[in-house]
Image (cartoon, rainbow, N blue to C red; front, side, top):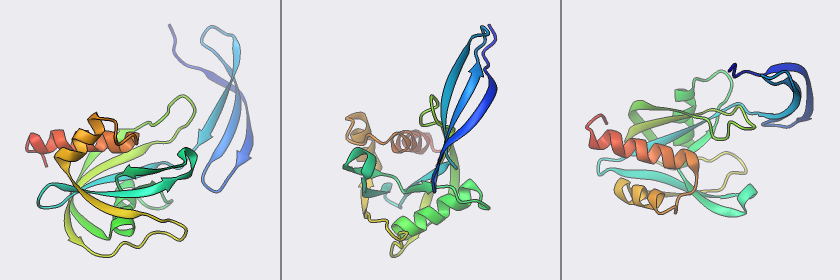
Length: 181
């Protein structure tokens, strides 16, 4: 069976500072018509930064959609004109004050492919130096260090619900245990 859908018509129904919502009329593989709502997003990046004792840097910040404080790796949206890696280095420095080295890609994540085209790029690195964080205006967060083993345990016990953080923590632990980091 052919697994593709053809766009017949497309209409922007919302244009925001970060995202755009599109309503598409589509044709399904069986020829029937349907609609798709798509959230266009510039993409993001997250960094698992390890110190010399294999502690990871995390940030805690209030996430409005969930109305709760979320424990996650330093992350942010992609800025135009910068590569995902450059964005990751920028976010790590801004949010934690850390400068990393020996960056490796942990791949890409599609956080919710049913309705958004967002792609999050994941990286791991070692921490070269640690200074003061410089969050963006309107961004409020606390930086915490946590042993990688403890972070894995928290992921497995669902104490870290953030998907990008779960994936990056588990991949970092696997690569560290196999000697690839």
